[in-house]
Image (cartoon, rainbow, N blue to C red):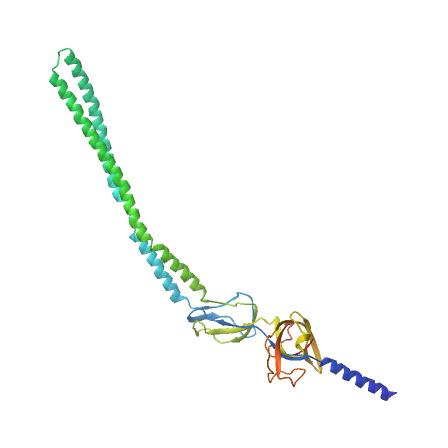
Length: 323
């Protein structure tokens, strides 16, 4: 009886172990690694990044010295101030012309008053001529005086119109000159906008939410555009890259749910749900580090499986797949 119980226990254990390690394919876990590179040249003023640190999306973690770019901006701002100083004002010329207009208007007023007096004098002389109390020559002289004053008024009004036209011309000429000068302002302001955009490159940010894997530069070191500062990856969703043989290919499809197993120690395994999201369209020779169910296969197809990470999965860790 004891021998029978022992035999059952051995068979049960063997069955359990076969179940744990029965898999259709195996591979290693990967993550989409991102190199965070410098977008500007300069000394790193500060860099708050350590390997293993978790960062949030767009989190500011450092700064590259922006002094040279800021000096460029100051130069462009000074250029705009210089442009403003080049512009002309029509006000001084207009004030002179308005003073002349005021004088001419006053002159016209005096002439009109003289004309009224001359008309009254002419009318009085005409009455006297009718009564033979004045000569016809006196009447002609009075009419002549009126014509002289009328011509003076006409000339003064013409001069007044000329002065007003000069004001309009002066305003237009100065406006044309200023437009030519101010036409340089908009391109210069665009340069400021470009420099402001360039200054954003001096801020070091995390492009994704994830963990810092490797740190390449430190505070005080010189960064060059394109040079890696640190490497990071989002480890919340891991990728198990595995390989299947040609005879396994018909059994799988994109979107298929699978079971992923990892070694949990003490001869036990831990399983995770996974989803096939990519199947290679081309066969390749079996990689030496990858085992398949049919080890005699020369050609295999790469398969990528998304696996949600609960913290146990690591980059480079081996995993098995059950389809």
